[in-house]
Image (cartoon, rainbow, N blue to C red):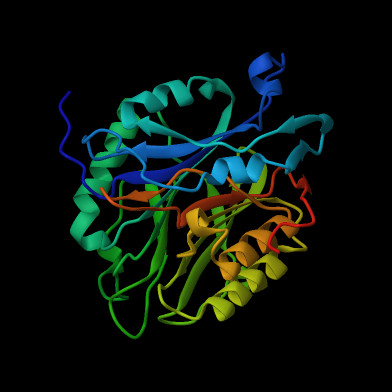
Amino acid sequence: MSHPQVTIYPYVTFVIIHDSPSNTSEHWKSGPQQTTGLANITNTGLTDNPQDFNFSEYMNNGTQFMDDENESNVFTIDSKQYEIEDLVTAYSDRQHSKYSVIHLNIHSLPAKFDQLRAMLTRLNDVSINVNFVLLCETFLSDVNADMYNIPGFNFICRNRQTNNRGGVAMYIKKGITFKHRNDLEVNVDGEFESLMIEANVDGTTIIVGEIYRVPNTSEVTSVERFEQILINLSDIKKQVILACDQNFDFLKLQKQKHTSDLLNNFMAAGFFPTITQATRITPTSSTLIDNIYVNFKNNILRPSSRGS
């Protein structure tokens, strides 16, 4: 089957959450129970990454992430890059896959709606069932938001009120019950946007959120807004997935204090970033400003010098 050219953005961040199989294999002993990475959706081939800072190495050097249920299981954080058809391999244990999440800065849903549907069709064609599609920079208004429903999904969004830029949205697979949790959100129109839901997936209740920090807004204030969301979530005794276009570049972590502060705040709250590769790449630069944070493994030992 031929597919339309998909040119939304070179990389889509994703996380696939697994159940533990009844007979634990070496695969499950070797790492956390999620598959994370970057999916290339442009059909142009994976691009060499010109980054000069290895975030994965930084995160795993002197930092131990331990499974709460098995403290002898110390794992590392390392995402990979996949061509979209190669995600079949990443998803090969899908009989134990509980749900999957995709995050994408779509930079205008009206302009790229057909491409988004094509991407979801391609994923479906390789037997990848996407449960949550999390979007930012949707460029929707309250007038046209109802025009962008996709069969098989429920759609919710938060639109910017001052203009038709920005905005966050979610596609939620039909059959998943959910409710809006605006009590967990922080929203400042034109500066910081978030959307949170509580969902039930096969008997497991989880919190799923999408966060967009507008570029060139105050770094100090933005870190405080992220911290407020973490405070809002602090009493939630559930699995949480937070997808972010944070516009703090983890490849510049050692050079930017507020970027380091942001990471420290997430980790102190029991969240870790699942994406360690650059998410936006040009021939001359690369940035890691998109991520998906999870709190499933929240016994984190950090060196005291981090962020100093």
